[in-house]
Structure formats: C-alpha cells, structure tokens
Image (tube, rainbow, N blue to C red; front, side, top):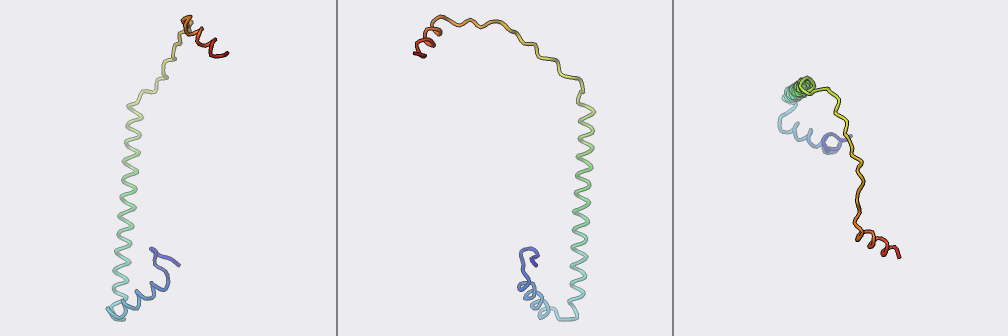
Length: 97
C-alpha cells in the first residue's frame, strides 16, 4: 500500500503522532474535516475540468463555423523540359569514368 509515496509503516507513524498531539477525542473531528476538504477540492477540480472542456468545445465549434469548408484548388504543374548546359553534361560524363 503506497499513498502519496507514503508506505504503511510511515502512515502508522503519522497516525500515532497525530493521536499523541490531538488526542483520541479530537481525531474523528479532524478526519471528518479533512475528508470534507478533500471532497471539496475534488469537486472544484471536476468543475474546473468540465468548464475547461466546455469552453474548448465551444471554441472548436466557433472555429468550425468560421473556417471555410471549400475544397482546395488543385495545383497545376508545369511540365516544361529542363535545359541542362553542356558543361554540366561533360562533368557528369567524366565523373562516371
């Protein structure tokens, strides 16, 4: 068992120290308030995540409305022959030897 990088022996030590500091009568109240705080944090985190996702979806929809859906124009290629100078031909033929 490993919670937040704390193993079972460390967890027992923390509980014993808390028992000595706060006493047995105060521990249930502290546990309850910690549980409520953690639940509140999780709820706020979930709310933030859902709000963020909702805004991202709205922005995506807005961008899809703005972006034109027309197909791109086809690229017209020119197939003109390339003229190679005679000096280049000489260099290529002598390099093959």
